[in-house]
Image 1 (cartoon, rainbow, N blue to C red):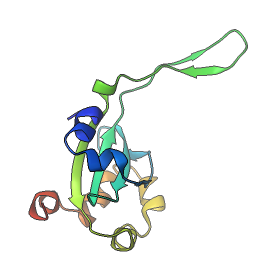
Image 2 (cartoon, rainbow, N blue to C red; image 1 turned 90 degrees about the horizontal axis):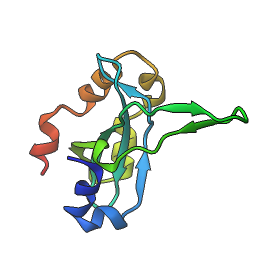
Image 3 (cartoon, helix red, strand yellow; image 1 turned 30 degrees about the horizontal axis):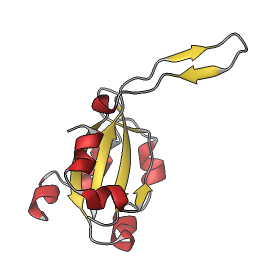
Amino acid sequence: MDIETFYEQNEARRESAEFEFGSEWTDAADNEYELSWVEATGELYLMVEPDASINEDMFGDFLVADELVSDLTVVVIARVPSLTELEDRLQGWEDAMAQENSLAWLYERFPPESASAQG
């Protein structure tokens, strides 16, 4: 689902504090993902961002084109009730995120069935 639909489905998400755990997670095809946790719902989600086009203006500044909201796809991968538990399960994430196909490391800690099983 896109990011706006994600927030529309549950207003608690929109009003909640969110914690980001990196924006350079990669899959086997080298797509990049951002990992975030919504405090009010306990949802840990990945957001895949489309390749942003980067242009240089006449002053040498780099400009990143705005992304369409409909292009920001969200997938809830787990429900974790507390930030403390999440931090324990994500210990070492900074190093893991830098590796190739870092989503494999993430899915070892949060198997795909964990999102629906804790629903």
